[in-house]
Image (cartoon, rainbow, N blue to C red; front, side, top):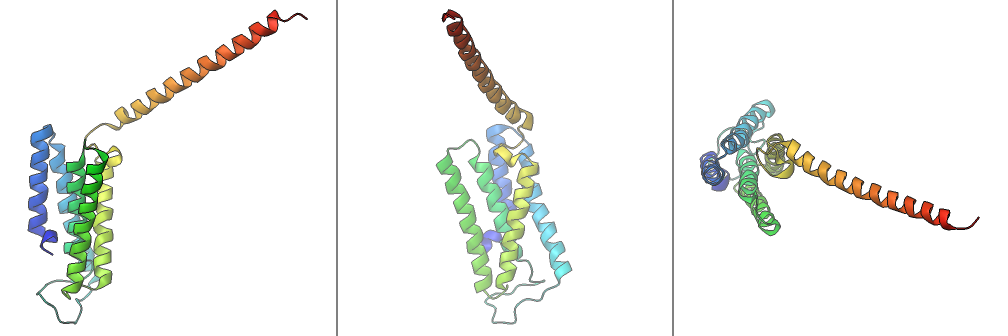
Length: 193
């Protein structure tokens, strides 16, 4: 549960952003983690007020205030730990990125399970929290350039690389067709009629 609390999530995002900034000297990472962390917090609280769902009337193993849907701890864990995995996984090998993503998903699932087992949320609350957290993370990651998991890289560079590769392949194909055409024409000219 504590891995989804607001203060833990904001602290971890700040530490990860600082590590990334020291390594890359790109301040955009702070904007990215702020958009993920603070945006999820605002969106979650807005939805809680709009839905206005009471907490389960069961034995609660801890006190929780406010409304129930969606689970704020779960949404925060899903969004923040996914952002941590993305930032720490940049320029890493595929197995490392996969391990980071699996760890982020495991933390989000563990927080969701703990909130339901503590009796402070319905199962639908934690499922809604997971959907909100992962959906918000995905939107912010796409906005910040997550299409290639490189924050701040211009899309033109990625498109340019693909276009250069395609242009090179097209030129190779054109040369091959030209050679085949010339050799067919030459062999036709040499044959007696």
